[in-house]
Length: 147
Image (cartoon, rainbow, N blue to C red; front, side, top):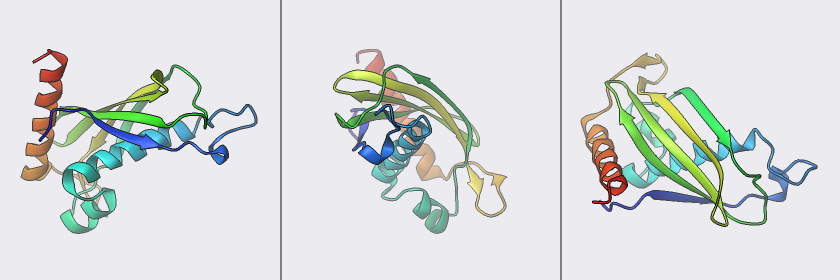
């Protein structure tokens, strides 16, 4: 796999904005979650729907924290950089940094728990998912260290 940070591009539309002509506050977590699902789709070949139905594992969110840095508008594409930062026995943490025209718009940390669908019972990630996530965490650490 490549060592590049995964980037998901979002077209912010007029309908995403409030009368102040900036994105509704509630849209920003939605954009981040869309980018995280795109990360899964890129690395597994399918998003949350396929994970639940085809793999028998879901990843409900148990924590999210966002910091707003600059208004999001329809003027430029929103480029969301996504990377996993931690993998526990039954959880995964992601970092999302969203930019418009090179300016940081928002950043956030998100934690999901691997769970058996319907039962919502915690479970370890499947071995293939664990291997993919561990590889991406190592690649991110190496990139941050300049290796």
